[in-house]
Length: 118
Image (tube, rainbow, N blue to C red):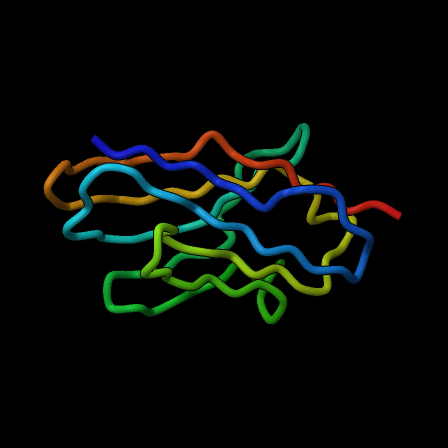
């Protein structure tokens, strides 16, 4: 099967940057989509960035121009570069992969906390 683990979260001041990574264990041959979600306290989970198998990326309006999703060919499956962070970016960030083969399924990491505070 596939397991995902996020890293790189932490405390940052407004205007600062963080880089999140999503490491995957298990075999992944084909992927439909990869993405990053976040859930702030008391709010619904929000899709903020996705990348399709052909490398096309899309972003939520709330992060467009500030966040960048990238595929990583090292031990990390993907990364999320977050710049110009705002107080409202505070949330638990989770990575998601929709795998086609060999173990088809929808996989999630446990999440990493990002706190933007002065």
